[in-house]
Length: 124
Image 1 (spheres, rainbow, N blue to C red):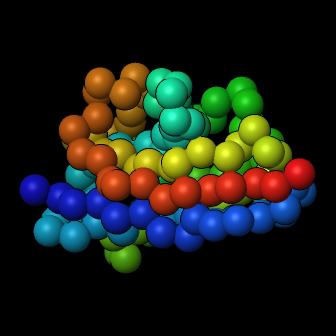
Image 2 (tube, one colour):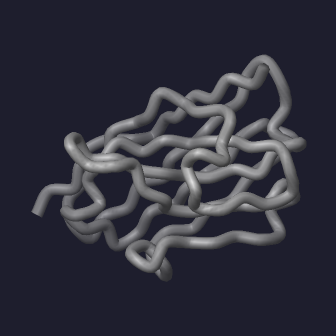
């Protein structure tokens, strides 16, 4: 069973950048489509970005399109989320997730494996 660990979160000023990583242990990432989601306390977890098993296809929530970029390195069992032009409303816990298959979607219930999350705080 694959285990996912996020890293790279922190405190950044509005307009700044962060790069999150999601690393797998106990298995490889190559069989899985992957996604990034985020959650603010008291609110539902929401979709941020998805990437296909090969990395050839990606998708983004409208709120982050043009600012965030998802990628993966299957040889290193790692997925990334490059976040640029960060806004205070991007403040949240960020979670990576995996599901078997070529490509995923934004439906949380379709993902089998989740990391514990990394906090991103954007100050104004």
